[in-house]
Amino acid sequence: MAEDVATAVEELDGFDVSYETNAMGTVIEADDIDELFAAVKAAHRAVDAERVATVLQIDDERTTDEQADEQVTSVEEELGREATDDSA
Image (tube, rainbow, N blue to C red; front, side, top):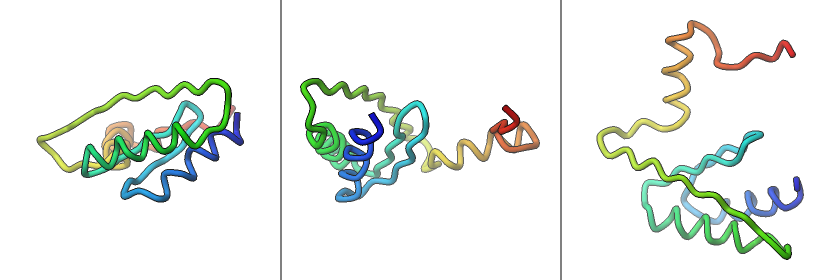
């Protein structure tokens, strides 16, 4: 699946979005909902396969401009360490 995921993620570069891919998916952020939808649509269509599944969850926080990485930083501040464990 790595090739298909890479194809979809590469498509996001043509849009005014920021993104981070991890083992569970790709977090996409955009200031404009229409830009977000266009980017997701393009990424979905870019995969040339018999079946493509795209799961979209929208978190539209309207009371703050905090970005996803800042939310992670807040958790790490509460933990007093990074929110990862590479010891395994």
